[in-house]
Image (cartoon, rainbow, N blue to C red; front, top):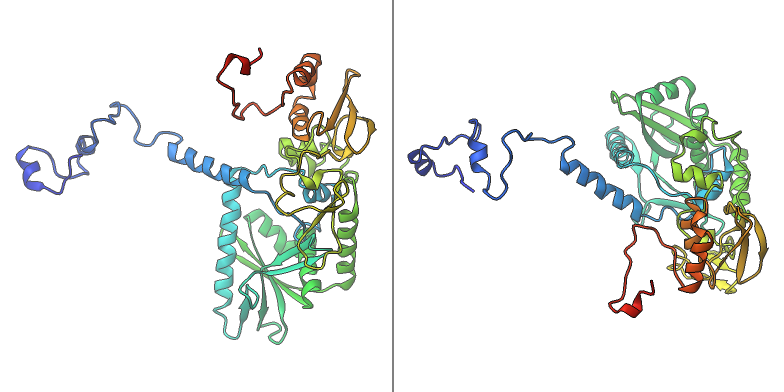
Length: 405
């Protein structure tokens, strides 16, 4: 590439030395990457943004999600959603843009902490004495949450320790918050505050909201309600102990909360397809260990008769069978080795280690199990074939005998 750090040589060659002179930037480009004369300098959309979104999407897909029922979730009115989330049935389907909104919110909440610490007399901790985020756990760690912080020296009550929680919200939501207050504005946030107060022993909470549109702030103190806390604990226990998902609280798919579900989430929620990933938490042989004292969110396997190793829980094993209520197909019969379902055309299909594995049935459920027609089942049985997603790489042997068709 020609540089503009040698004015003498460039001047003698008659080349303009300013990069801001029309034509100079083109002359400085390498010869092996020419651009057409009419090519836009910034194509729409710029490839860099497409690459950025793809990188964020990969990071979202690689996450396993939380492995417990969260205190930040328990205030949701729909228990079916909570159960499906706890059992790892609903995928993370938010867009890269939404992910950036979440991360911006984290940064803003950090700024709120910085501002509060500038108030004389305020003591605000965001980590425990070990340098870790404040973490609470109940029922063997399967119900828990992470508190933003603990604050002392709040001008309205300088001698009282408060649970501290901060949120960033849009202008529209901020206006509603100022009009209603946090309890009526968001039952989820209110329940979260009650959980943190109940778990920490503090009887007051300071909730601060930041308006992302114009940087206005809202702050309010919340009183601890012991009966609310007891009710939330009881709700969590019911969900953790439930072997199958509770009924939906939504009237139908058109209900205002239900209609915003992403496509895959909605299909799983309404039992129109199986969850995308089979693992121990959605296996009919597993159950959460609610009595573990180390709060490690352990799972027990009734087939193996022992605790499931932590590294196995996210992936499951070959003996995985779907919880019956998750499958759109009716159960014909079931035992320890397999569950037999009835297909829409009256034929049967079995879920088990020696039949269709759970992940195969999940793939088949995407199109209403039509791939399990007579030809598909014949191929599966004759060649010991495995049903996989079309985007997965297929490994084929080198000799003619390795491919029987």
